[in-house]
Image (cartoon, rainbow, N blue to C red; front, side, top):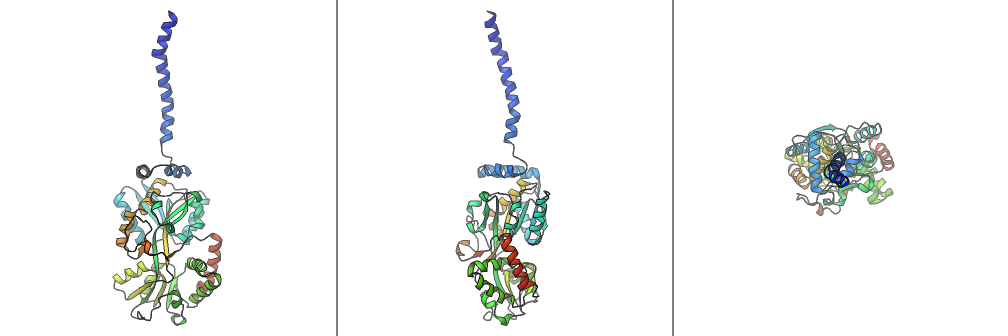
Length: 370
């Protein structure tokens, strides 16, 4: 009888109490297991495992909690501001701190900070030819729009341990002063630009490693060296950026610009400058790539910014404000469809060893020449 009463007491009191205690012990563990990681490689693994809709929900929630991101960019301040303003329309509570750097300084600074384990940048924007030499500092984050892009606009991949997306491509142009050169006289190809009759009248940028690299791929080393040498023999006026090059043409410092952005020339035309242009032949495009960093202090805000900048909606808005660009997200509708540009060579990442070789060539042929 006593044994039966004890059994009933055990079932009514002891078993529920033990069960409650077990649940209390397990609850914190389950909660911690479901909480988003806050830093390091675990963030990218966690986000990659989420379905797109759920991932965007988590990104928005966690990015709002972080409240800011630091963006290193090798683009003009006014162009960065266009993107930041668009971002703030959707996410007004996330502050974007933009740090303007040159295409040379940005990789150097990022890698120094990476090696010292003191990274400041959460995301970066830079031309894709510099991506390979800074890939160790880039996270393997593929945005939800990754599969929507033309493959020519994608760099790296989760399987390679780093990613970057060319959210826009600036078509390179040959441009001239219409008050000094007629449309009939103006060169329409880079081979025509290399004609000695233009010597002393031309200008281009100092960062020409991507041209040297692409010429080698298109023509083979011997022919490429000859063609690049003829362009260098023009004694070009050299500018540190495409923005500077276009301003030099607009102000009359030079008569003819090559390797300039068509977008910049269209701006000059709208402002009333006496300039005209044709797209370069062969057709080259300079991509601006967006990537997040492995040591991001605000990883969710950085990933959300990358998601925003690679969405078709955002790129359609940029297309309306800045004609002359090409966009790779195939879900969007743009003024210059990428499908019509099958012959376009988009400058891609250059390995560190190749970059050193090509930089020496550029220094020798173009920069020290002046």
